Length: 260
Ligand SMILES: Cc1cc2nc3c(=O)[nH]c(=O)nc-3n(C[C@H](O)[C@H](O)[C@H](O)COP(=O)(O)OP(=O)(O)OC[C@H]3O[C@@H](n4cnc5c(N)ncnc54)[C@H](O)[C@@H]3O)c2cc1C
Image 1: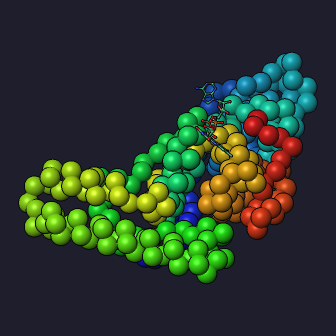
Image 2: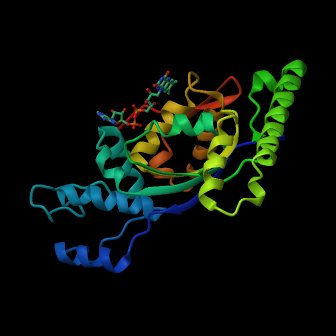
């Protein structure tokens, strides 16, 4: 077996279509409006927020005589008052590689604001097994022995079944798929796999809070600590309010503005 660590890869993010934004700004009479947002994700969130009250500049809406200047101040206020729908517009796209089915089962429980494409173990045949080894087992010599031995036995089972059913000689893809799906039933929950996962910023904040907390499972805590590290400097005005406390060797991201 191969011992792995989860990998977080940010593969996509929301981008503004400049001509489109300019059309809208022109339409409401502020073609010169600009902001100091560090990213399109933050700029778009600000635009949708300001759209609600036409608060791009004082007087544009006669009811508005003062506006908050700057992206950091503006989004800081959105988080403070919990105007969370504004930050649903921008979406980040991740691939989580070498995560266990333990993690993917837990991840897909988050339904609101997410999209999922999971590596199919009906189609992708398991050969060698890879797995993340949790701390309690990793730190025990005997525990490690049992873990590795079991994984190796399960690898052998995959090879034995492949040989028994002569899957490599099989011509029908349909039968290969059925056999592959049958073989995976004796694979462990800890088997490393990949999942494509997209999430809007509002949902992501909620999930970071829930899944880095000390009562969450070790591997998903590790994963979402890595997610946070990947995005915190890229989108500082949307994720800069977190404090980090290390509990049981893993970071716990805490904020005053929970579940906005
Ligand atoms: C430490 C821990 C232990 C857990 N243990 C278990 C367990 O033993 N068994 C188990 O089954 N699950 C368990 N879970 C999963 C948990 O119950 C949730 O399903 C999961 O965390 C998804 O979060 P969420 O409900 O906030 O949903 P999300 O989809 O992330 O939704 C975000 C928010 O949107 C709102 N929302 C979403 N969908 C709806 C809806 N249909 N109706 C109304 N409001 C909605 C809610 O306010 C929700 O909090 C555990 C989670 C954690 C963090």
